[in-house]
Every structure is written in structure tokens, then in C-alpha cells.
Image (cartoon, rainbow, N blue to C red; front, side):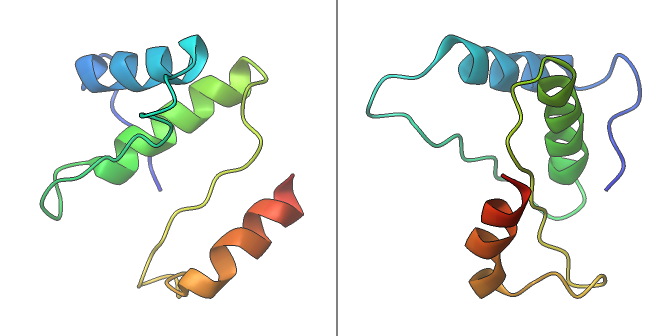
Length: 84
């Protein structure tokens, strides 16, 4: 997916990157990004993945996508394991 336009959605990107870099308490190990279709969840996720990769803090990334036929949840863990 495409990433965010430069300088946009920084509030969300900063929140996610800080959560990922500073560690999380045991009750918050998953950051759940939700919203209606078309609001930019994938773009935010892609921007964050690129920032983590630049800091050598990304092990794997997976984006579900119906148009690209990447919508099978059974492939999530095998894809992450392969990238790792």
C-alpha cells in the first residue's frame, strides 16, 4: 500500500512509532488501528512500517488486501515467519 503524504497523519504515526519503540506494558502489546474504509489505515501502517524499517526495528509486515488476493488469514503467520 501507499504511505501517507509527507507531514500528514503525524499524530497517529507518532503515537504508533512511540508505542513500538518505547515498549508497551503487558496489557497493551497489540496496537489496534481501526476506522471506516478509505480513511487511511493502510497508508498509516505503511508509513509506520517504513519508519520502523529505517530504524532496523521491523521484523515483518503484512497487509490484508482483497484486490491483491492477500486476504487469507491462514497465511498471516507463515508470511511473518518467512520474512523473519
